[in-house]
Image (cartoon, rainbow, N blue to C red; front, top):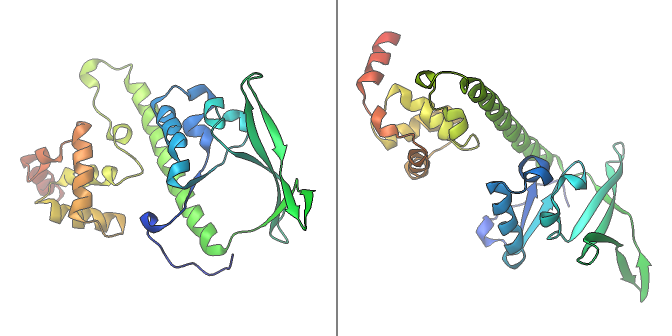
Length: 248
């Protein structure tokens, strides 16, 4: 692996797709297995093989992963130590084999055939990834963590509102809408009214600092509508006009 960023290849054109599932215990831990997310994840794990998906799952401890999902994993890789000065980490991979009779796993060390000899290779050295990869990873991780924190804060607010009278309760878009998408930005932006989807997509794109096409905006708008957030009621609304007059 070189330090140069490789040429971008669209995902659908790649023969193999690598997916990194960070902090697996948050969305699919052993105690939360019967949730909708975990059931969908089990379906995906069952079909990854024939779609040429390579899934790398990260969790602090292996027992945080439910056994039904773990049975579909091929290998468990344990982090043993790292040398930050040399930029090298030592790992120990073990091949997983589920024993139905014992209802437990066998852990097999990897053996390599070298010059006709079978060699036991329990430990491997891996190099630190290049800067462009770690920077992109940190950006994605920060975006996920920030979105998760916003959702936790919103759910705490919702928990407090549950003790309020029914007349004081209202929908909370921070919980209902996907925090990892542009739906929060769309809903906040339409509070000032909008002319059409083209004009709104330009405003949302400017707000997010990237290009947002009307088609992409439209798909998110339809998803929001199914959750009870219909932006059409705010299109050139009198309420929006009143807000504009108050701000001037």
